[in-house]
Image 1 (cartoon, rainbow, N blue to C red):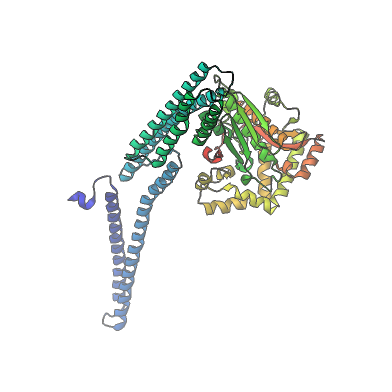
Image 2 (cartoon, rainbow, N blue to C red):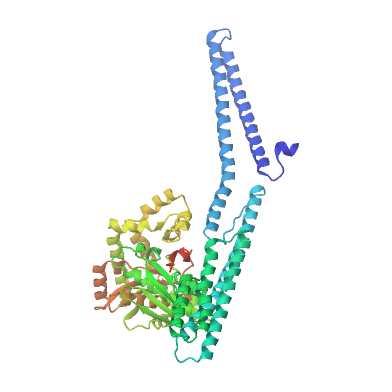
Length: 581
C-alpha cells in the first residue's frame, strides 16, 4: 500500500512525491508566518480603533484580505518553481537521450550516456549503453561479412572475365579450350551458389516465405545467359562465331550484375585523407573509389568566393588531402601513381598491396591540428628548422623561416595587421566568415565542419547568446589585438611561395605543406595560419618585394612554436564525401 501511494525507493514517483511534500510544507510554513504577521497587525489595529466602528472593521478586513492574497501568491510561486524544477529534472536526461539516439541513427556507435541518478532514468541510460555497444559489435560483424562476401564474389567474376577473354585466342588447342570452359562453368556455379546462399540468409533474417520475384528472375537470367550458352558452346566448340557471341554475353551479364563493394583499404585511405586542413574548415573535397584508383574532386559548393576568390587555398587543401592519402597508401603496403588534370581532378592509381610497414608521418595524421592558441614563446632549435627545410622536394615550391625578432619577422607582422584591417572592413568577408562559424557544441556537432566556438575561446552557451557575443568580437580592433598577441608568442613565421600561380602548382604546394606540418607535429611543433597578406593580393605583391622575393607568389603563411594541444576540429562523415559510381 505504501509503495502504491509513495512509489518504490529510487523511482521517479518517489522523487515527485518528495518534491510535492516539500512544496506543501513550504506553503504551510509561509502561510503560518503570513497569518502570524497579519494577526499581529490586526491586534494592533484593534488597539487603535474602536472595534464597533465601521472604520475599524474595514481596516481589519483589509489586513485579512491582504494576508490571504499573499498566501495565494506564495502558493502559486512555489508550485511553479517545483513544477519547473521537476520538469527540468525529467527533461534534461530525455534531451540527452534524444541527441544520443540521433547520433546512433547516423551510424555513430561510440556515443555513451552518463547519469548520476539512481532511478528509472539510470536504468534507461544503462540499457541504452548496452544497446549501442551491441549495435557497434553488430556493425563490425556486418562489415566483416560484407568484406568477405565482396571478396568471394569478385574472385569468380575475375576468373570468368579472364578465361572468357582467353577463349578468343585462335591459337588455343581444343583441350585448352575445353579446360577454360570447365573453369568458367565451375566459377559460374560457385557464383550461383553464393548468390543462393545470400538469398537464403535474407529469407531467414526476415522470415520470408516467398523470395522476391525480381531475385528469382535475376538467378534465372544468370543461369539462362551464362550457364546454358556455355554448355551449348561445348557442343559447338569449333564454331568461332558462337564463342565470340558467348564472350559478349558473359561480359554483358557480368556488367549488368553491377556488384559494387568498397575496398576497405581504399575507404581507410579516404578517412585519413579528410583529416587534412582547409580554409574555415570547409573540407572542400569529394572522393570517388574505383577498382584500382581513387579520385579526388574539388567541391565548389564548399568554396570561399570572397577570401579565396580564385580557389587557390581550396586546391592547396586538395593537395594536403592527396598527401595524406598517399602516406596512408604506403602504410597499407600500396604503391601509387598520381595523375593531375588542369582542372584540378586528381587520380591516385594504386597497385596491389604488399606488406604494410611503419610510417612515422602516417602516425602524425590524426595528431596534426591547426592550433590557434597563444604559444609559450619557446624558440624552435635550428636543427629542427633545418629538418623542416629538407622536407620540400619540389623545385617550384620554396619555404622560408623568419625568426622572431628579425626585421623580416616584424615586416611580415605589419603586413598581417594591414591585411586584418582591410578584411575586417569588408562586409562580404565578415559575412562569409560568420557563415562558417559554429556557435556552440550542438551547432558544431550538427554540421561537423566550420570554425568551432572553441576556436574563439567561447563557452558552450545557447546559440543566440554565443552568436551575439562572437559576432561582436569579429571586428578590426579585436582581430588586430588578438593576432598581435599570437604572433608575439610564436617562434617563427613560415612563408611558402610558388614559381607559378596555377592549379597543379597549388596542389603540389599542398602536398609539400602537409608533409611539413606532419613532420613538425612529430617534433611537437604546433602551427596556425596567417594568410591575410596572401589573400589581399596588393599586399602580397608588396610583401614579396619587401622580402626580396620578386617573381615568387606568397601563398601560405604560418606561425610555428610550442604550446598546449587544443580541441580538434570536426570532420564530416566519410560516407558524405564519397561520389557514388
